[in-house]
Amino acid sequence: MTTAFIIVISIILIFQVIGILSLVSVRAVVKAGCVSKFYWRYKLLFGKQPKEIISDGKKVNVASYVALYVYGNSMKDYNIYNGQEVFVEPLDDAQKENLNNFPVLVFHIHNTKVQSEYKLRKFVSYIESPITTNWEDIFSKLESKIKISKEKFESERRNKTNKLTNPTIRHILSETYDEDTHTYRYSMHPVSSLYAKALYTVNI
View (tube, rainbow, N blue to C red):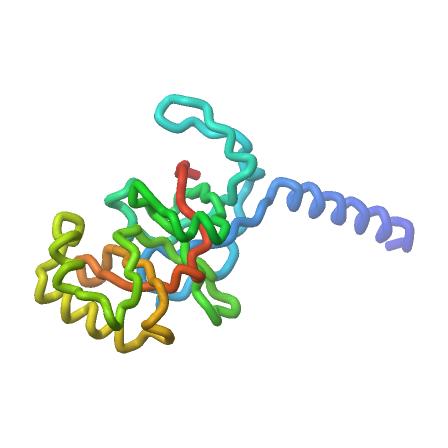
């Protein structure tokens, strides 16, 4: 086999690889479920990130949003499912402090290394200071939005509060559905850990 032939074959293979790579795009992964489950930080998908999608029968420009690949079904109540692409809008500090309409949110997961650095949660309420808040009042105000008993919520809330790094600052109370135990779970996150809110989803 001549050197020239090897060079030609190598060039052909290189162009083929480049052609395949041009059809592939990378999505960051967001966990919709237990954060302890391992999911790689990125997902390779065929096709470029769309600039327009159809939502509720209308064409929507999503070019300015961030697309994340969903693993898990914890947000199934809000029409976000495993294997979908969710388009999210990153929030600035002012927007993080003024959420309304109870959106589905994306929070940072810290110290994840090669794992996904994001998780999906449903916004329930702001909690000004978990350690000093009157939780009786909180539960009374939010009872229609909380899907577990008062006793279970209080037990879970107490356990979560004890694990908070800084329970005196403002937090967000969130909801997620645990697929393994088939129940709803409630957690608290510092407002600063909020990344974005979910706007649209599409099937891939």
